[in-house]
Amino acid sequence: MRIYSELGTNVEYISYSDAFQLPENCIVMNGPRPDPTYYANENGEWLVGPSPQVQQQMVIEARENQTAILSQASDMIGALSDEIEGLEYGGDDVPDKLRADLKAWKQYRVKVKNIDVLLAPSIELPASPDTVLTGV
Image 1 (spheres, rainbow, N blue to C red):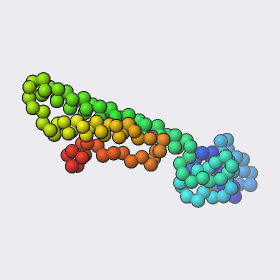
Image 2 (spheres, one colour; image 1 turned 45 degrees about the horizontal axis):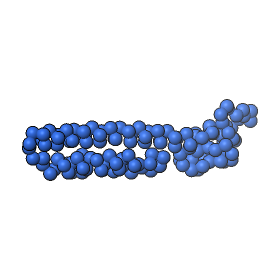
Image 3 (cartoon, rainbow, N blue to C red; image 1 turned 90 degrees about the vertical axis):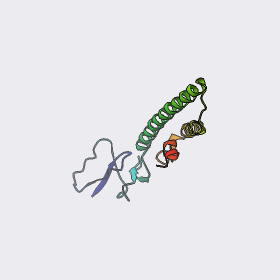
Image 4 (cartoon, rainbow, N blue to C red; image 1 turned 30 degrees about the vertical axis):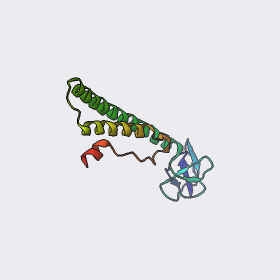
């Protein structure tokens, strides 16, 4: 019996054939995979955690998510700023809640901007002001 894997993946293959021929991009492993969270390295060892390729994909996805959230926050900040400016321009009083909402969105945007996406998948996003302000 031979155990082999595609390098950098958690895929485990077992061959019972005497005429075993190692497929391209595969490596003979030193033993069975301990559990599905392990991936194959170039020395035939199972290493715990996401493989470098999977980690890279998680970072890309985290960066895309961060960009989308920053865009949403900027849209909200722009809309709130426009509303405040319109009220001020018209000589109307600006409600304290509107100013507090604007401040909350600005603080949220800074927190999201400062997230280190290289820590994916162990990223904890701050609560959105939508959630905090509405209590959802």
